Amino acid sequence: MNLRLSQNIDDIFVEESGKIISSPHPLSQYKVLKSFEESGSACSNTGWSPIYFSMGDLYSFSYVKSHSYGEYIFDWAWADLYQRLGLNYYPKLIHAIPFTPVNSDKVIYKNEKSDPFKLLKEIKEFYVSNNLSSHHYLFVEKELHEPLEKLGYFKKKSLQYHMKVNFKDYDEYMGSLKARKRKQIKKERTIVEKFLKDNSYEVLFKRATNLNKTELSKIYELYLTTIDKKFSHPYLTKEFFLNLDKFNECFFFLMKKDDDIDAMALFFESDDTLYGRYWGIKQEVAKKCSYLHFELCYYLGIEYAIDTHKSLFEAGAQGEHKLLRGFTPVEIISYHHIKAHEVGEIIKEHTERQNIQVETDIAYLKEHLPFKHSNL
Image (cartoon, rainbow, N blue to C red; front, side, top):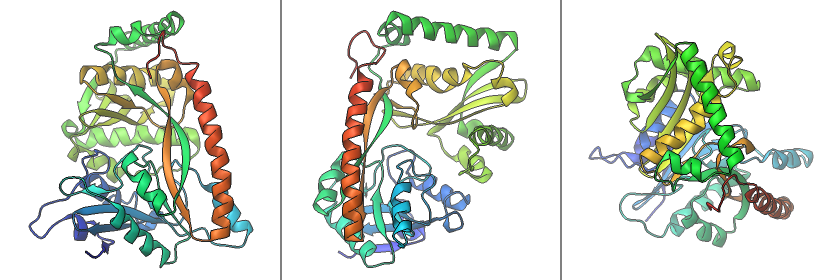
């Protein structure tokens, strides 16, 4: 079997019969990847040049990057080292969902799962033979750890907060918390409830497929408010948001008054996992009630995850405030290969020391979980 590759997703992921090969993961399925590109969010013009691979019944997607934005596994120090040595760190090759810090399939199987080693080996040979400084698999599923290590990739550990949703209902979740934490959550939700009532707001659950273009446009404007607050650059275009009505796996909690949408939280879901992705709020509203973020992004998400029998709730990157609400610190694994051997050894040794620190941080944070008993 030979490696096939193309910069056009349809060349690889659409068969001659018209059948689409797609990941079961809601954020790396064919239609989402295609929307990233066609909306101008992740494309060559934004420094994300896609390359799609296949070998037999195995498939993968990747991007040639001219920067390190929107990845959430940080390698800026590596790029800085390259620059100080007079070397070019970019372009590089990564396997990741653009702008999306979640564990996901890096190898997609047409039928049943099989050994991915040969595909990974061929992709590595492609990277080595081209003008690419390095190769990165971000947020890697466990089944790829061993084959990537056999191929000479080194491991980098990072930290996120996930919730194991092992509660029969919301009351059991609240009952599992220490009294002080439970009291604080009740206080926050009571304040939010009063604010909503006093200001004639309602919070609605809405599937993306049930929203019109006007509503999706308003949601995009709210997404921009969080970007403006962080003084950063919006990765997703308005066109991407307008395409969300094609994704049944996407839904929102919307805070509305009449036809106005003043705050929103965006989620994706699979059968067993809930993914919190983006939120936004009008700044004049945010100043009036500081707990709306926790309500829309966490508490309503926890209730939904319990009610729909999810086993895991991934609420997004960073934020130790998640710890206080029952999200457990977990290791996130990525794998990396640096073509320049001597530089790669320096980076690898530094990363190994960082990995030990991540392990130490996780152990410390687990001692400060809000549960009365272990929920690990």
